[in-house]
Length: 183
Length: 265
Image (cartoon, rainbow over all chains, first blue to last red; front, side, top):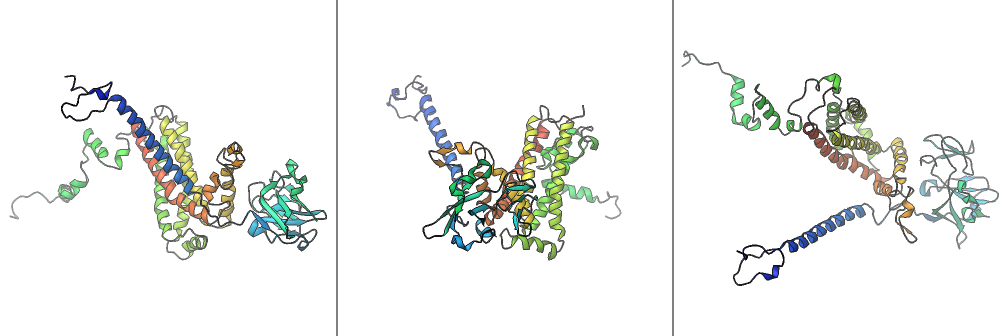
């Protein structure tokens, strides 16, 4: 009778006199139960992370964040240069003190303003925000000035703009020497 | 043969006695409560529905039919949307021209307008439905779970409108999505300018930056471009509708399980 019952304490005590179907004790079962669920959970997490990673491609066909913009003397004093706007999303402005690279992203909701030479301002077509040549917001809903990008001179004498570093006027960052190029 | 008194040929009875009819409709519609219930229970479409509806609950003044209208508009949108898919190609080169062609070159070019108006109508009817459910107190137990399902359906309805907004690929679409997607940029922990995102870093390496946040996953890039058009198309035509259909089935089923349409207090 005792041999008929599945052992609940120790699976090794069963005598091997007669061949009988192997029994799995409660503890053995529970440990395999945990392993099975753990494996299942790990496989599921792995599959989910594969899907999430799949959404981020390894190669992007976007303009580079850092690029060269020609020699400083190619830019006239007092003129807003728009030739890099479409490709790289910057305006290059030269004033009496130096050159700075303005972001073309409106600080209201992210549209792209237009430079209106006649009125000497940047005007956003989405909600009418206006910015001065320096990038200061003066009309419409934009809450803060346009951002400036890191600008420096490369070894070959060309202007080097790095869009991964931004300078915000309201944080006093426009005094940072990296935010403008003295020429 | 002809002069013997014979019963008049009954076409209705003849059709109902064929094997084809009986194989489709398992139960006739008689006046016994059991057969009426079985008619509903044995039909895959009807069985989501309550077997019995209170007379008061079915009154137009109580429900405004707003939920049913939402479902009807949804079906219209599915049909017209599938029709649009026969012509529309979600690429930068073709998308805008295909939308114009749908109006100018295709017979019954109103299909695209039907889809667009339907989208507006569904937003309106879903809101009316929610307002009605709220004002009649139908969100209270035992219907609180179904209220939550309904809220998720409301969000998915608006996401369907949002993802569909980009597909015409005109100036309005481009900038509306540029503006709208900035919400993803500010999502806590998941957007690179959202609160808490700067905390997710390994030493000096930021885990959440403009190339790894949820906005990037939606746009397939850092701004609205070809990848964004394709992803929004797939979300709009496949991913969100599948989720909506599954949740709708749960939503209708739970009406039945929670005791039918609520009665006026």
